Length: 293
Ligand code: SF4
Image 1 (tube, rainbow, N blue to C red):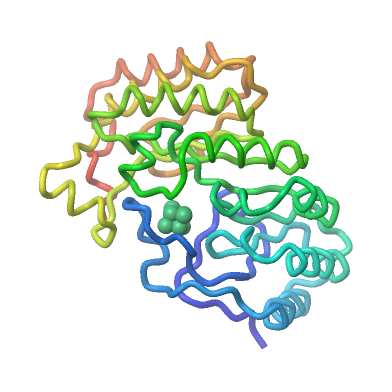
Image 2: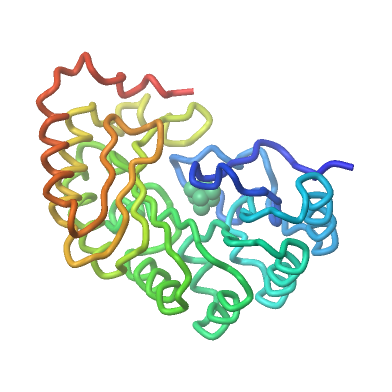
């Protein structure tokens, strides 16, 4: 007996040692122009019984010492609260050494829950939400069809923080292209300041041939940033960040240069490192389309 997986499985790099169980298949939104992750899947929530069986199989395969569980695919947070509570409790029953249970959650699905529900989920073991904020700028969010506004992202971020669930926010460098780069950085920075997430994780935009943004790029309606422009945008984001206690991580291969640190204490060092990266010749970096698949 093996854990049943359907299609390509995605997980954040920080979940490298987690037991991965698909609670949902695909993404209920599936409209973001830059994303190709679940284009081949029709969204559905798996029956609780099947998810629980896979957890049991996980115990048989990896033993009861599993410490971390990540529920994929997209937006597991949208499951009914009562079902999520059953799942979280079952995880703790099967794996007594469990330290962390995490899942993906976008703002529009987090906002379907009230604070009381989120507090109950936290008490039952939900440790962290991986949330693709991507941008705090309404024009960028609209352009990529993210499905929520800056205000809705603010509401979702604050709800998660008030429930004392760890919030891992993702920012995509270059998502506004050349035209919206400055607003993308500044408005994302000011939104992050209001939310004060536990983690700010950088990804740099990669184009995928099966994602709608690629067509816009080919038609010259979207300009990818080059390495130096992407680093300038990152610098503007970092300069804008203020009054937060967050880990800032470029924990992804898409990024042109790694800058990691803790806010507020490492802000100046991160800016110095970005200045150093900006002093390097373009031959030191991948081409903007080198990751295009
Ligand atoms: S980025 Fe996230 S919310 Fe958007 S389509 Fe992809 S999986 Fe769904």
